[in-house]
Length: 417
Image (tube, rainbow, N blue to C red; front, top):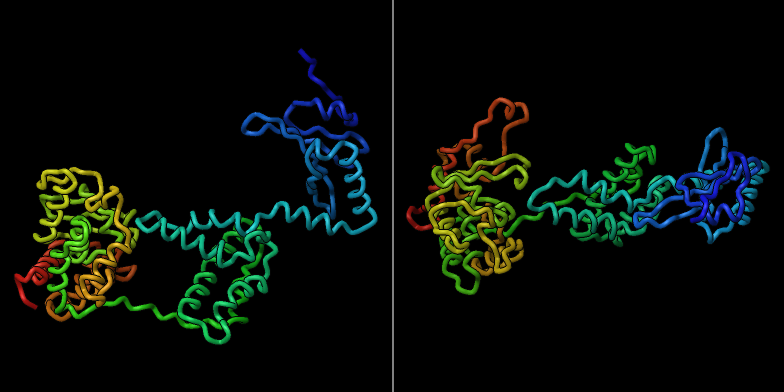
């Protein structure tokens, strides 16, 4: 058994000590070592790691300057580097050492991306998609910045990233304008986070407002047909034979409830209170981030009974915690699969989101007795002001039930517009 090697405080390091020491911690080079220290650490696999660090003082501030790992850098080489740094501080300004030390402490643009995304993306049905969009914007479209220390990025740097999308030889496309807007917004959040963490003092995105134009973004209108075509479309979805029945049931559910595609495709039957014909959409899956209660028509309940049968239930009780409308792999359908069915069934006239527009227009023109806030509530839109919402917390369950039953009757041909 070997005797543990030791060194008295203030003594200089030796080659033998550096090679043999296994005590985790800092081991200084003693008097005249110019702040040179050997750092001994253990990796997560239990291996010893040794590295050289010089503690230097410039302008009243103390910095730790890495000099490399042992044995790649020997004791003699580490001492030579420490001596050179000390000479630089004594006979020069030491600015280069300060800048290098600051860069070592400041994280890169890329390293902050996951942290900012975690703060900005609310857990929901579309969280995975939103996360990928943020990563695409910040890591791909802003690729020129990813390896730069976040504290050194200037207005000129961010302008070089954003400008091509806005200027585009004087003829930017709507897609370019959207990318530029996403870049501005998402980088603004990243730099704001960097300011809060103390990595910089200003937000370079603010400088773009005076150096680049801000083209107006027109929200694309989702394709939708007149609501008079809705019964025919509903029947086409029911009767089509080239799509899985669970997908057809999903589209029928979305069309009957006016719900968003993401809310329908992630539905689990346990969210349904059968005796009340009531769907409670959890806050975690709602776009608004608030729990939504939606009454269900008799036709919608029939859709759910059939979905339960397909899932292996008996079609009369909803105890299943699995997806109501799974694909053949047991996963939720993609928005693309839903969109393709609606587009095909409508002859290219309607998209999935357009189904909501058909319902809203039908309600506006055929149920003039229904207050606007009820029709909007069926779409999970809250028209109340912030102050009003604090006091008026009504769910409008029965009023929504009446409207949605009327809409279901119209779709199934039991009642004309």
